[in-house]
Image (cartoon, rainbow, N blue to C red):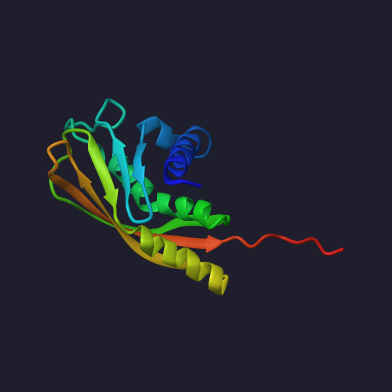
Length: 163
């Protein structure tokens, strides 16, 4: 599958996750802008649904953006390697640098780390944890926050029926 087709498929997958499985993704309007083997870029607009009482982006909306940017590579590489992946976050820490008073862009450059975790999970047949970093920028390209996400992946083995 070429990169443009895979990007289109991943955008659709984020949309469907927000529609049917994780409604908060749809509610906040998270958008996948770019994904490749190393980098994912996600955007959340500052609007009524994502604002707090200080007219800056609410912590929960920032966490949703970091969740998608830090975790979308698990689904991306599941498509690349044609495997079914079980994915969750095991932990998160964050540092807020300044208030997010505009739309925010979430960038993760740890795609290769996630791929290595998936390949290791295929090899050992067990859950593998990997730490990824997500940085958040406002429209002025100023650093707003840093997230450290612990991604936990496991490749689901196909079930075989004994006859």
